[in-house]
Amino acid sequence: MTKPLDILIFGAHPDDAEIGMGGTIYKHSAAGYRVGICDLTYAEMSSNGTVELRQQEANAASDVLKLSMRSNLGLPDRGLWIGPENIAAITREIRKHKPKIVFAPYWEDRHPDHIACSKLVQEAVFNAKLRRYETDTPAHTVEQCYFYFINDVAESDLLVDITDCHEQKMEALRAYRTQFEAVGVNNDFVQTPLNQGYLERVEAKDRMLGQKKMIPYAEGFVTKLPYMVNLF
Ligand SMILES: [Zn+2]
Image (cartoon, protein in one colour):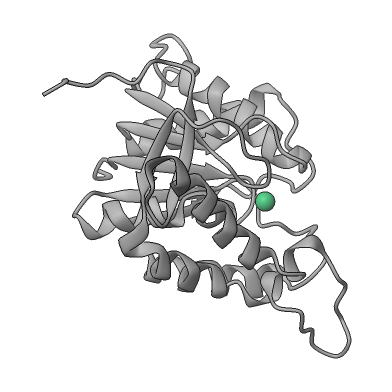
């Protein structure tokens, strides 16, 4: 039987979760929580790198972030349509790992696959708890679903202080050399927004998000349900 995860993060492509919340991931893994990432696609439509290289890079990033689990559903890149098969595949993954908390990309982003991933995960979180949906796997209720920022940023409902683990986040991101470095093999390379100073922008974004609490680096999240706390 698969040991349940505390946190399961979904991304459309390997590197999405690291961009949005690599610091939060490392912070919780290092504290002993079981954190996993599920990539929906192998990013086979990426302009640079190959599926094989990207998988090697994802494995290296997973090691840096001390992940308990990383999976890939192998759904088609640029084919993340909102339909029953894709929703069922994600639902099965949620039921398999039984996370307390699920993270999905924020629902507005310049990349349509990030928007689709956000929508699909919301549908799957809902279906996962329905005992009469796909009855061959037991229903599972996710306690909370949060949304992380990849390209677009909105007002945050929740900030996580990642000052102590910002370096690990950047190290995990630097593992994706084919995406973020402006180098290619045998001239097989094109300029994309990712290899034109993107990591500097990620760092600037994390600094900007920390500003409201006067901390050096933060990651921001949005939630549709209220965040419940004990005041003291
Ligand atoms: Zn992406």
